[in-house]
Amino acid sequence: MRWLLLIVCLLLIAPACNPDKKTTKTTAPATSGKTAAAWFQEGISLAQQIEALGEVEGQAYQIDLLNDQALYAFNQAISLDPTYESRASGFLGHAYFLKGDHQAAALWLQAGVEEDPGNYLLYRELGLSHMNVGQIEPAKKALAQSIGLNDTENHRQNIIQELYKIGQKSFEFGQEYIGRGYPKKGADYQTYGIVVLQLAFDLDDSETYIAEQIVSYAELIGDEEKVKIYQPYLK
Image (tube, rainbow, N blue to C red; front, side, top):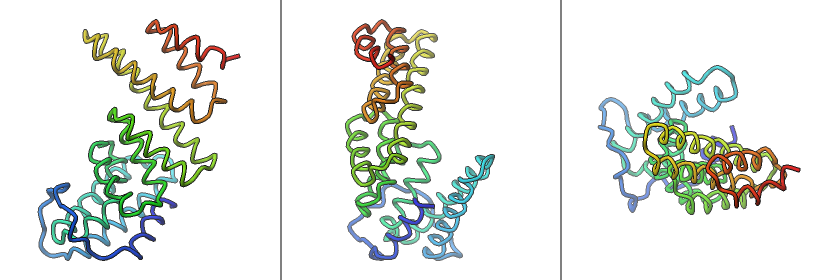
């Protein structure tokens, strides 16, 4: 529940409105019958249910349903009263992150960390969202800020595992594109996958399984330089 508690604590001290915020991030139509405050509270309630279910196995489908409802509720609140945009930004960023819409997640999470610059969980998801869409430098910056705010072993390992999955996924996409006759695009994905794995390894060079994966991928694409760099870590 740590993520949700951090966001809710922010709401208790944040101003109720921010007239300087733009509202271009949402297009949800306003719905009569409920106030913006009611929609906003509904979104928070749904977010709490999602957090609780996240600790239970086999609830992915239910989480997806609740997440879509939360997105709708927060967007409805903003449509009725744009001053809720800043207060909902962290929630929306997290919801889009769970949904796998990393472009939208990065947009909202950036607004979220501007509202709550001490929230390491938002910075983590912002960095991973950037990484998922190929934006390495913003990703590195956000992840460094996240670790700077919470440099515990558990948090660091969480980031490493997420980067490892992104790196693997990217390299596998590359192989798939090459198999479909798109060698240039495939090679770009493969290279990016290795770069992400290198970033994961840089966070903890005792994780030899990452070095092993880098060597394996480097051998597949004929990158002898990377093989020489990471081979010694396997001993």
